[in-house]
Length: 359
Image 1 (cartoon, rainbow, N blue to C red):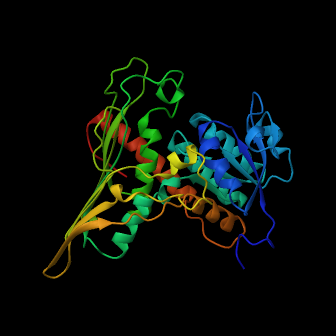
Image 2 (cartoon, rainbow, N blue to C red):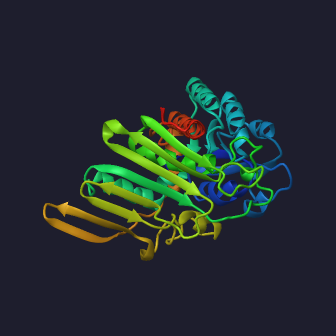
Image 3 (cartoon, rainbow, N blue to C red):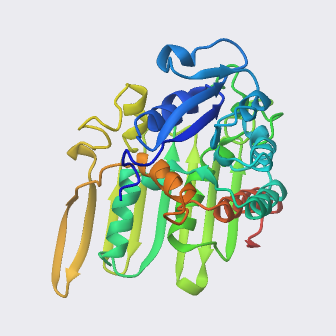
């Protein structure tokens, strides 16, 4: 029986917040799935969500949302420093919970959430949508097929160019816990490596405020996740002063190299109103296909493009529904989410102390 069949009642969902994350990602993905019914949204001011989703009930607080007995799953899309406290309240109220990344702003909060989820028996996950980026799915397929031989290094970058501070943005205010690109983009890059290889043995970080903006948090990082027992390292980088973009992925193996430019298309498509039901959704243009330069068989060398796998952000919520219904294991576990927060903290501490740290 399909999890999306009409014989299964849709899971009733409440979303906390209606900012960019909810508008661009969560609500469109939930609304396009027969696994869910978008029932309620928390907006402290106004009812903007009803313009797009007229069926929703708008409430003004998390308490009001939790008072709606039919709500089975709560999505937290509020500022980073509220993620852990809100998720704790949701779990203690007996509801399943998805938290926007980062999972928490410190490891202590993160590990407490893991324990509460285990005790409650409820599903707890973090929205690591970039596990379903087309480029990352392509990379996983190449590794699965051993196309590069033993992979010794992955360089993973997520760069932007913005020389000036974005006005009224809490993510660029050092007074807000969980601000800065290490929490914002590091949470994605580190999660992808943890998904591939588990936790590293050592973390070495350089975390900086390269723009030297007063009162701003970090805007650049270079973090090496080292796996000496596996003869592998991941070099994760992000910055705000990168106008000419380097490759998104550079992967080095004993048989060759895979190089991929450009970011996944799904975020821009969702911003443009292209939903998962559209035939163009998740499809990348050939101009951005990655290049594989490798010895695929002894004495047979090839160099050519690799068609990027279709991006599949809807699969995150398909898995959440299956986990809630007891039909599948959770793809993004709270334990992994807590490990990512530990990596973030170790990277910052490593940078401050100018030394590598054991995980």
